[in-house]
Length: 364
Ligand SMILES: *Cc1c(COP(=O)(O)O)cnc(C)c1O
Image: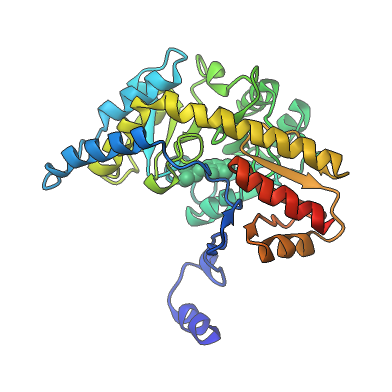
């Protein structure tokens, strides 16, 4: 391993990549995988069949490049989101990670700063580094909350060029009030900051949680990013997307690789969107398991954060690593996100959730 690292470091790597290890959560082969917030329900059979049929017809045309503008997909995404959006507001790429990367390629880069609020999604600093954008942070409160005043002050203090707000936030699970987004947008006026709201888990939010999509009209620096990886159970297909002013999507056309969304990807996403209702029915089941986890952890004397996502972040553990290992020994993989006293667990199927809760009860 060290030899390999030596060999790597002898290459003329960019300075900001020197010494880095590739990022990625462990992919272990255990029976109950609750560590990366995947949708633990497989695709319903009718949806799997519809995808297979649509992909089959796309295969006939694979000798040609796909629709570079993925117009049909942008139309379907706009229809799914509603809020008066149309194809001109939509953009998509291979996972919302690639969407975020394209935003940084267009609006970040050397001499520019991206601000975010840890603990938050661990990909933001890596995407910043990969595009030579400076990554700056401002802390959250002791309860991991973020107020409009705190956030706006950080935007002014850093004169950030890009701000990423994750809502519901990963790893803590809680959604932000829209007052925070509004305040950050206004505070970003001076530095003309692009404000990204990463709503990867929006479909799992409690009823009454407003999406930042409602704030888009009249805010041309605001971008709301979404993904089909979580609620749509399509992590393996790699489809993320965003809604924003049409001029934002025009900016992304300057940096995207031509034909970046394959015909197979477009066909898969279109078939899944045709069956959004069936997929969102599973979301309701996952939300009930999520609420069950919050209730049971509370009765075990632990401190789960309020969750609007498909996972629960919980504190009150004396030795989180020991609990994590004890669960793994029983075939249940959850996530140690490196925050003292805390762990994060994805809401599973009813049986997976039971396996997690039973083993945890024994360990405590
Ligand atoms: C899972 C997740 C995503 C989704 O990434 P994809 O590339 O679309 O799979 C984006 N943001 C956050 C905060 C996530 O947790």
